[in-house]
Image (cartoon, rainbow, N blue to C red; front, side, top):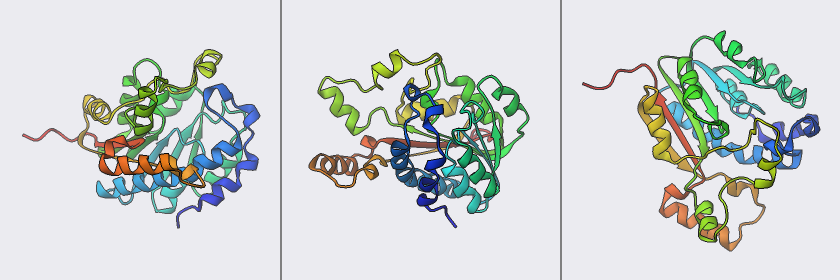
Length: 267
């Protein structure tokens, strides 16, 4: 049984936003209610891509699990799931979600920025390693992060990431109007160091290229839109966006990419 989104939204009163840094993207419960509703689409495409790759069971590592929407879904579908995030850094703000995941049978690894290398070193290998909406938060080069992810994939297993599409419809609209496509300069300017917002967003070809650099083969990718679920009503601008994305999927707001690890190139 898949988790009903209302189960996750109903837990939001346990989320203490005051313990998080809003300048680094951790907003209030109202924001995350919409985020969780929208994430149904992301979870659907994740499950679909796992199945298309032939992975219908096995062990999964969810890196950057946050509210656990991927971890709980996959656990209920029969996967053996381990979820990792910096819950110790969040000062109990997400304890309700950690308890929920544990109650569903998910193994939760709580860590901090300083301690996560040791935590990952103890994890071993998995049939699939997911990191959803994380890579855009990685400063400097994402290479060590991607190398770490694939190092925990068993031979023949899968690594999967989703991330905002920098070339999405709404970004093209903003640039055409002379507006920035980056996150608020006010929030980033006054953020504590290290800033944990979006450092760089990517195109599909860039995501594919990076997986190739860390040795992935059989790379699959897809575009999809999930942001329109945040609106109670669709306006003419939304209609135009949906039509544009239907005609050209590369205008959608999200990229999902996966690759097989430890498979030699074809002769």
